[in-house]
Amino acid sequence: MFSIFLSLGSAAVLGAADFVGGMATKRAAAVTVVLWSNAAGLLTAVLFVGLIGNSGFTAADLAWGAAAGLAGSIGAMLLYHALAHGVMSVVAPTTAAMAAILPVMVGLLTGDSVTATTAAGLLCGLVAIPCVSMTTSGDRSGRRLALGSIAGALAAGAGFGLFFVLLSRTGDASGLWPLVAARCASLAMLAVLWPFARWPVRVSGTTARLALLSGGLDMFSSVLYLLAVREGYLSVAGLLASLYPVSTLLLARVVLHERATRVQWAGVGLAMAGVFLLAMR
Figure (cartoon, rainbow, N blue to C red):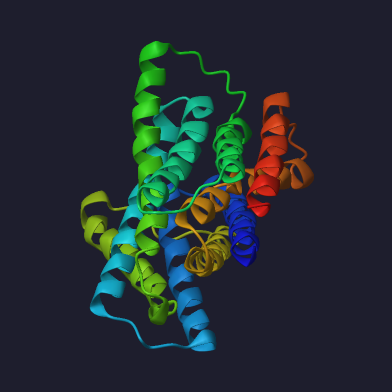
């Protein structure tokens, strides 16, 4: 049960991070926001390590963490590219669904126990995620564009899903050090790519604050997820952490007064049903 609460907390915080990050990307290039948020994430990870402690990590733990960081960052860049060049109403739900499916599949294949109630909860969650993520974009540029959007979204979702899976491979004794390795790897990758892409680095004060807040929240979400997956099953923790679009949707409704569609509200209902069923396991 504690793992479920941690996973839901991770989803809520990650949804807030995406909401704040989305506001930042309206003011600056997406990759620039990713750079600033990764820097904030590293500082946040170091802070949590200092507070929680634990130095029993191995080289393998750091390698798993670094691989997770690279997968997550590549997923983020692929998502931004897909959103910029594809159909948003296709990209968002496809990415979210793929990010959830991967840890569920890996968890089930590696021995997570499944009851009928658990299976029903997982199914509700898997259906809820694309429903909540679905937008009402008016882009109807054709089947070819939609298919291209799906390919990019699947790749982005695979990156996010791999982040969940790879972090689950780290040992309990490693504490939060794998998250430090994850952010170091992400920043190193961006530093290597910068001379070729020449992304802008400078941003306004408001944008910097939004990006830094997004990065801090994102890392806090990762901390909660890592604790959750060590307490429970990968399939459950990965799925519940992937419910972050619900948090983003609710924030957009409350803060920006955006209207949600009936399909999105149905997704919220399915998500709540899935959480209830998983809690009954």
